[in-house]
Image 1: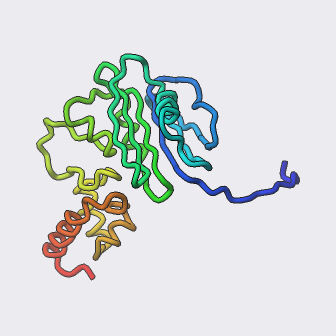
Image 2: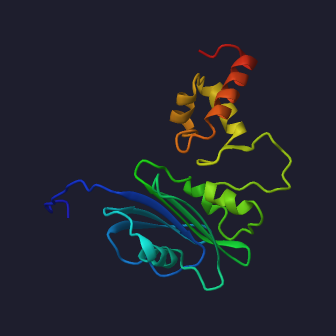
Length: 208
């Protein structure tokens, strides 16, 4: 096929998404979007990107249910922010994470796939439901604070931040974002990132 002529053109995408499911369910329903399947240690993941706007109303709800492959007895947890074009869903069966779906506009990033894949099939209780939608999960009986999650959107922990600041001599929150993506999505962790940076600089002196 090396000599086969092709015609290539860029496709503008309106949204991107990530779907993770524990069960080997049928492929995602057909529609105006691209998908690619990635096998996981537990279940499978799908990277999604649509070249038409997301559906709305009841058709959107039906489409979400089909993507999740949720059974009738599922417990569905959701977070929606239509203003930013962010939609997140997690389905739990018997208190275990069965599937989850993250949809966002092209300018809004999804959590790292590996961080979510590690949770598939795990028991999620209490406040852990909201943590899953943030893209991380920290057990309530964990008392070690040395690697607590600081950036929930990208599952960046305190230990990782300290290491990057020292090893790469990061001097600003912007440089932290460029290196680790921390603080580049919702922005709620930026004040804490600035404080961590100040503490690190005070400990080792001026890193500039």
